Length: 450
Image (cartoon, rainbow, N blue to C red; front, side):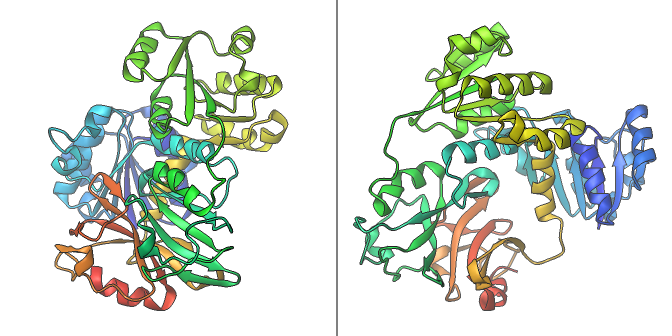
């Protein structure tokens, strides 16, 4: 694969290292002489010390033959311009790192469409998704996320007291923001359809918006979801914290943010009136004791300063916080921290750069679909397919498509919007569909979309 990366910061250099190890043909564009020299010394890649938003530079880098163009500079405008130019000059797939919430506001104009970008990537939000998954599901039961964190999958047991027993899925009339994808009954795994009848003891795999999944769990297990509100304390009021608050918008979470900057505190208070904002230094043991961190359910440190994150997590763990998590930004800290997590009392450490690399690596392939996971017993797969122009599915409603048996669509990604698909949703070229499908039906499924 021919890959061009613009920007060699923490995210860009990590992608450079990772992709070069897979024998891809990697070219990096970086203006900093120091960073460019370091790349040349450490990795087997081509380095251009020039501007990534220059058409002349992109042509020199071979953009017309580029399979994947990754704009990973710190500046949003640089990434948007370079990606737009790359698309116009022939790049097949463009990934653009973006921070500013302005560019995610599609109320006036869709920036992704306007600039011709295939994927918008926000490293801080991807890391926040990892944190939110653990907070929403502390038992860690078969949890994964798809559709950039907007769709989650959980494993739920149908208990003997469930009113769903003996009913078909069509009769249950479930929340339209969720789907049942699989049913495990003993050693047998089935891809669910409208006629599937649930029995006590079944383990069902449900896909959907996290809030919808939480609200629906009681339909299968009457005891699920009961209990007090979970108390979450977040250190830092930056971009990752904002993303995490949005992901935990359900009323069952009682959130406090500790932030030292008064101006940022005011902005957070205006943006999130339901969140308690505390101005203070999070590394202060006195402040942590005053805020009763020892009795909180989740303490999450996600400032830009790794040393502060580590120290406050050590203190929170010592004070007795039930679950302690943090974000790690610097490459050289990640490996050491991973080895010391247990000793530090840290349950989860997330890295924006690793989350970004993992997301991008999902898509760097010549395969006709992205393999997201396998069903128990290898009877089938969870795959993501991109709908091609003029394919049998292009422009048709979900109900009008002759889906193969043993196949169920559980997520639809249309431009920047992700949701569980309904029967009347129209599939368009460029859409991404997450599908659960039996192994032997994959070829039939691909005939509908490619």
